[in-house]
Length: 111
Length: 115
Image (cartoon, each protein chain N blue to C red):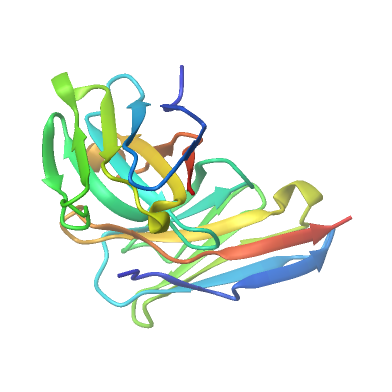
């Protein structure tokens, strides 16, 4: 079963706009990670946020985590056509054992 | 540093035939994962290795799927016999485990088509 559930399932925006994707999960976690997958490729790690953190930044990426709501969001600012990809959240449980991906958000950035 | 290497990239077989996928993880990564990814879905874990030990194979369909990781480095995943529903992308990933925050590094995957 998949713990992380991203929404929206698909998102289409214009270049330069911001893109926000959300992830909800069900059980307690040790950390939550976001990955990107370009068409026909493997997944690439973007950012990790631990359960005791509320916000992290990496370049144009901003991730928030609300453990009380069991949710996370990924914000991509000033999007580029090259950001077109599928984005997945993945949760790691408190034992660092179970690693569960959500179904992903398919982002299209139009030039 | 070389990434995770998978082969073949594509495989087309007829149902009931056997098929095998190979994965070479990043050097030094003790944890290795095999995932299956159906079109439009996230990866689903099939099996996780810590060194040469399979520590989580609860989602591996053991009647037709098998895996091994000899010497705790390379790994192979086998399906015998393949069914139409096995068509998917099979991804291999490796990590340093908890020591590395469980950040996973993925190969490009093997796209399997069962006809």
